[in-house]
Picture (tube, rainbow, N blue to C red):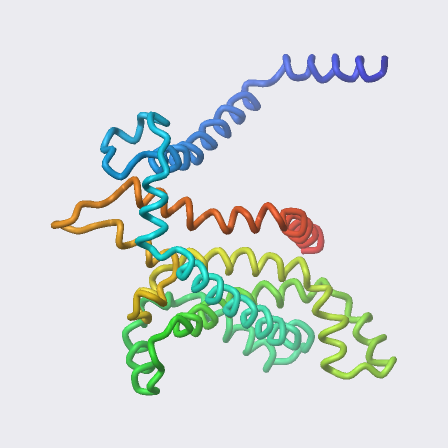
Length: 289
């Protein structure tokens, strides 16, 4: 009986919805349609054969796997998938390790030196790395750094450290210092305090860094395109560029859309498997921050 009354009360509140709330719902629905519509068009076009040049607005008029087969073979998808996993995994691990190590003293030590290093890392957010890519490439050549699949990792790490240090140092202020002091009184060494006390408490910020920086590194094509010269070492975004075509060879849109779906599929699978950890980490970070 109580549930029925509650349901009736909610129904009455819904029927008495104010114009402002109704307008807000309309705006949200329109925004969702604008976001979802391109994804639906991409998926619909990917299910067509490569020679089907019908309007992409005509949704799901054909169900064929020919575009996926061509994208898989021309991209050499397994090799490029492995390259992307290696590049993203190595870069994210190094970013998390060094940014937490740098943010720990910056967030704990209240001196001018710590503040200087804080602003030193923050200054890396001001200048886009694309503006200085020419001198960076020249420096790599002078140091005889070869163009391999691991060369872009250097750029990914250096470009991600400023934001990661900023995020970790801000989150570090919410971690009680008394926990570290008690571990110090128990005789824990510096590394022991960091690895067993501090780092586990940074899990929400770590999840945020892994998601934001991992997504950017996975989807980035600029640095692999600049620093990788062999096709067998391309990552997935660079491998997709071959389907854009040129003046002589028109773009293979259906194959390109199929390649986009293939590139996004690993991230979707990873999120589905680790969805609970991602959501819990972000929610905890929001509460603590």
